[in-house]
Image (tube, rainbow, N blue to C red; front, side, top):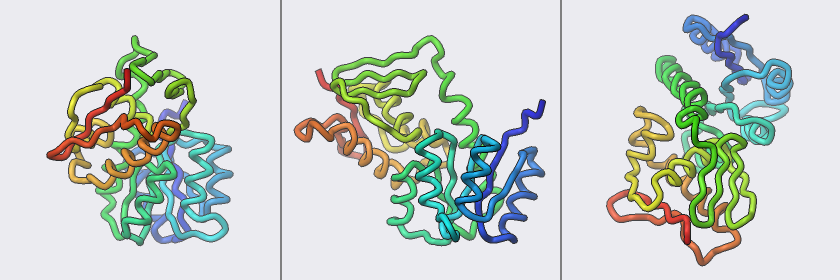
Length: 233
């Protein structure tokens, strides 16, 4: 039985695809490649990779739409590649469910570090606390096994990273958590300066959690760069 992690690379640049395939295979990963989102989606459905790396600008189906479709059916880690480094593009990619964003040009060692971190989090997160499968506090009920979230009886759909962030907040309700603490816990030690990631995901959580209760503020911004989670009474 082949237990090598499977990585799907979706990019329409043959030279970059060859570099990624060579670099990833040399580190023990099993790799398949597709030249656009449509082909990537077909390969994903047939092969079920453990992680997806996708470009943004591609023919037939671009990376954002590919990511959106993947996230509708799977919680697989997704790393976005793009030559566009504008904040708007990054926010949009993270907003639809991408786990990480790497701007071209990048070093292969940097990408490999991101791959290892994403795979490590995907494997370790379900088993951090195997005895605890249900979190309940105030207006919130989170099932860690099914990854279902209910707020005041309403089911809320979250992306994998949003779910991980909310779960961490729930486990530390009432405590002031610094940006660096949250980034290290959810993204890892290599992301301690990526405040942008945190702003995007906290903003998304606020929109989803407070949709039917605009007068409530579950995620409270604290002075000196931190957040405090208040689940309600």
